[in-house]
Image 1 (cartoon, one colour):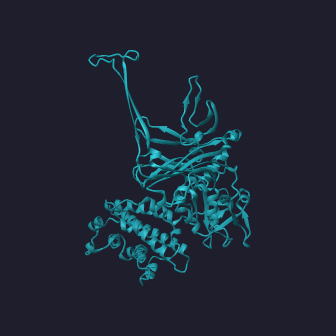
Image 2 (cartoon, helix red, strand yellow; image 1 turned 30 degrees about the horizontal axis):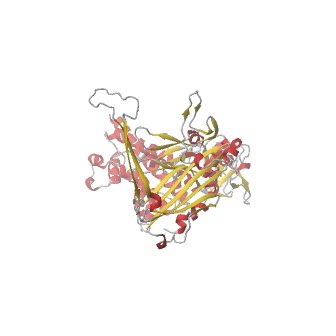
Image 3 (cartoon, helix red, strand yellow; image 1 turned 90 degrees about the vertical axis):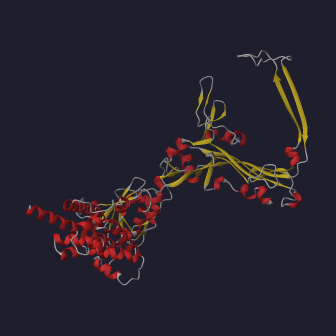
Length: 590
């Protein structure tokens, strides 16, 4: 190691008041595996304690040092003999004098052993956190990690830290400031000081960076050498033959003792040790958006006029302001891929985006393929969600979605269906008709519900995405077809060589006609052919596959994706229609 390492040069210049993460409690020791008396032994220690102090006790808080709130301070409840009970969250300066709040508790493990710390439940509930592994996350903010716990190999807590912006929010809501006291130590054993980078260093103590730094340079003899003494005392009045011996009072006659002493010397080596203590405050700044619900001053602005005029979202947070906002379609993808968000379709051109903050954004697609949303719906969202929307905000173009206006202004929602919503229902319906016709399962395995529900026209952002969408559609229908059963049902001469779609065609043809069965399955075949284009995007048959799938390539990618899903759903409906007609004819013959 070098001088800066043992002098803690970088570490003492850094403060937690300017850091992203603030430790609430720490007790970390890192060693290189050598014995503490060996040359080459290296050790690094970081320990920290904290307590939250209200303003009326700030004067006392300024006096709190390492011995008062450091890692040696026991954070436990205490019952006094007179009936007074100090709860675990109380920090007492003197007995029965609570002046602060403990945010981390100690939880002794008297039988199983180990060191366990518990986060103050008020902090967890106030910020509405849930635990995932060793992290506490806030689902309402895209599952942001708020608190991190670190444990050693034995499961003992060594560190609990909180992201500062969330800590400040909580402290502001409670009117508290956080007092930290921490200790750093670095040690290295060297054979001789002169042969190292430590040569020329002088032991001593000084004030540095608002704390106290001590450098110790001691020979092994001074650390572990010197005189030693051992004393042994024992009783002589116990009859070991008695069944229940009893010792009487201690006297000179029934007590004997001996002592041994010596001197330990000759240890070779020098211990170089840097230590640093400091206290600091983490101040709340008075703003509590999450816990107290203060207005967030950092909310973004949005384009509201065709000339690019912008308004802050705070001025749009009024249900009586009859404005809409326009966004690029990828705004929906920016959310629907995040955990906790869900997309639901209401009509062919309108839907709802469910947020982790419990809001549901009602949106519509206009003639320019832009997403339109009532301004107040965006303005009431949490600031972080507004910022995501703002990143995709564009000027008005193409008007407001007609179907959105029909619902929000005319109170007459459009009587249309989104193909995304129809697809899953039709796949289930056709399976029921198939079982009724042939007495068996159309699909070899169950539908991937999550994939089926999340499938959307917003998946088709470009040509490559359209090909991936084709692959997903194929996976949900034709790849699931029960080819074993269909081969048993089919009367086609070459049924053993037919693929799943051709097998289905051979089953449908006798129920209608070869021409109708072929035409109905055309979009399914086209989409099936497109899925191979994902691996070979320059393949010459791709455009033919698009045509067979009934996709107008002159339209936007968003509309092509919508067509692909819609035509696929219509094809499955056509399969169901043939099966239904076949059942009706069978009933007539019966």
